Length: 148
Image (tube, rainbow, N blue to C red; front, side):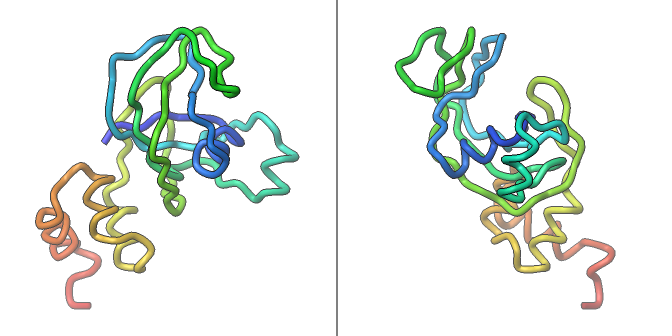
């Protein structure tokens, strides 16, 4: 699944406070679910510290349903706005970010979170872009988990 790096506290506002637009200087034709990556660089250090916001990894999922060049949303400030729906917070999955849409290498972390009962099979399979049966097989074959 593709991911998009966003600085905190904007990730938090998307996942918790109804931020329905992600402002960008470039448009996208992409529509669908993306992982939200909280970059290590933040916009408001004090806010992030007070709210103990995660950085440096995947923190949620969101659906991009449109890209607009004008909006009545109070969150719109940009040249382009990715219209966001259905925010789903996730436990922190540490990984490096990148510019634009990127494919994070998080398979091991997702399997570990499933074994820790932090993610459901449905969440794990969705994050990794596979069906539940394939996700179960992946978890069954995880070398560090065999014999447990």
